[in-house]
Image (cartoon, rainbow, N blue to C red; front, side, top):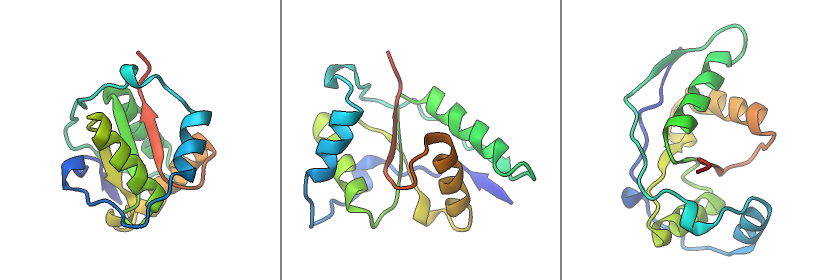
Length: 135
């Protein structure tokens, strides 16, 4: 099975969720805060990368995620229907931050595999998964 990680959606093409609350943002930014002035505003786009799943469940996927995160200032793994993900996208848009966005629910059968590897890397089983490079 192959996974193309170059299928990111520009933030400008995303629509805000009409039912937004800010409780998740408080939790997100008080527990994982980064000074806003240090968030890069322009991502470095990576070429499409094709990865084959292996018997060591996702070791190549994990390497690809780590490479993608290392090569881009802000990376967001999201689901289109998730209001928390929508809030993060709206916040980044207001801040002028253009993250590299991967919509896991639009990646076909590879989306759940990628989500599982993200859970293993971060210990977090929900989206959004936000990665901001340290300056």
